[in-house]
Length: 165
Image (cartoon, rainbow, N blue to C red; front, side):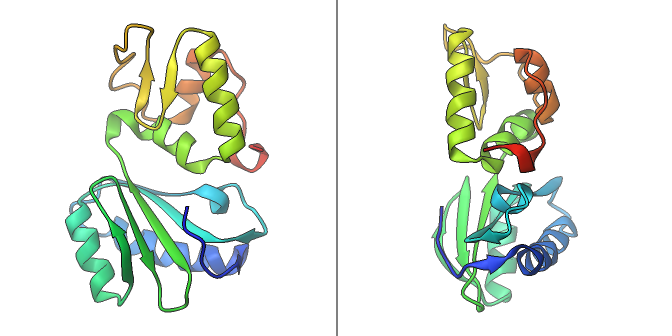
């Protein structure tokens, strides 16, 4: 994603929690979580990633008030450069895809590629929006509200975020 100032885990987590708290307190927010390298507990991160079920326009307003510079804004992802030079990526999803989006946005990229290949070997397509069968029909719509259900569906042992390489 975005590449800003490199930042140590503890400092990045402090910044992330500030924005997670602000977003969680918004009346239009249903769910919010830290994802990406910060969720994987990497010692040094290049940016902060947050996943949200909520209103992109409300979050854009909040980020503007906070003085963050928008480098990209859309209904699925917004990227902001904070005054500190750190980049903040906000990924928007829906409840039915929360778990698949959490898995995808946590990464790592290599880990996601391996999982997608393993799902294809079983006749499915896995991405941040859910799981589809060979006929491109969404599988289990509404049940991918956590990662564990995806791992269970494919018969994979759950892997903690910090072990996903």
